[in-house]
Length: 490
Image: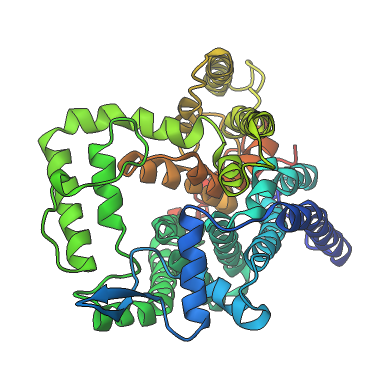
């Protein structure tokens, strides 16, 4: 049993669950306040999520009406993922399309995320560290401010953590939880399709020999695709071709291939797709354009990756800018600047402390020289990297995210314990880094791993993992894998 988990006694398990419920209530209070006091008319992408939800709630499906030859024609939507609008539509059917419905739902999802983060953390960290990590999630100013936005990130992250927790539970309670994990991951993909990119982590998170892990991964994949399948079939019937979830993948790839700033930029016909007749054809055209531009100038593409990751990790301003756009009177310039500074400063400090989550406190030199040297060098390097990022006017914190992604999964001497939960935590950050290295960056995209950064910060400088000792009477197949190393209680 991982020492980062509750011991399993009824009293300790109930105590753990009581704290999870307590942190849920701690998280929900500021989120509900923000949702009620700060929410206004949805702007930017939020406008489209709200409009799509109203159409679904009215029985018109995910669609819009367009003028063709002087008459209104029903047109199906697929550019944006449907999941978030579908969730809002359920609320609209019950409570009406009030502007408070989406923020309140986001507040509930954010509070649930704090609960889930604690449950995952208890399979990764000691009791005290898990509580610290969950408290950071509950009180994270950026996550709290996001409650007032009609945006997908909080709901997508809650579904991702729920799927991760189901995978961890399946290790002891059987394969039916793999089906649950696949279902939740499918729902998460309908909200944010890149949630599917965590699927490669599944094999590493499951116990047993490779064949058993592979079978478990297949169950998760099948359950995920079965959850998505009705929507895919709808797209095949209604559109000019089949689309798994949405038709913004090719669009995003093309933006990632042509952007000079690393951020979003609007594509135009002269960028490569002058004549298109349908949404699926358009998406495939942009995908071809993206890959062609990458192949034509790979050096340029790789040179822009630091800018993309910089736009993703260097600051945290999207929520404040959204609120300013929706209510410029309340969010005047002084309040806007103060909000950006608070949110960005917290994010940067959190990312700096998160680098220590993949570093162990160096053991005594005489006990393990290699482990001491490696971990001491990593510690010195991370401190220097953080100091430079904090002091630099450009605040280039993307290098800290790359450091965590690059070091976190390597079996370096003296590394801190990882385990299945640790693989989920670190691997989720690796997935976001790779995703936005390929596509483009915006600071709202790091919100899906803000809870991960909280848990990594709580995991800072633990004792090294205990080396796995092989018994001469045990076969290699029975030897514990490196992911099953017993975490320290420190």
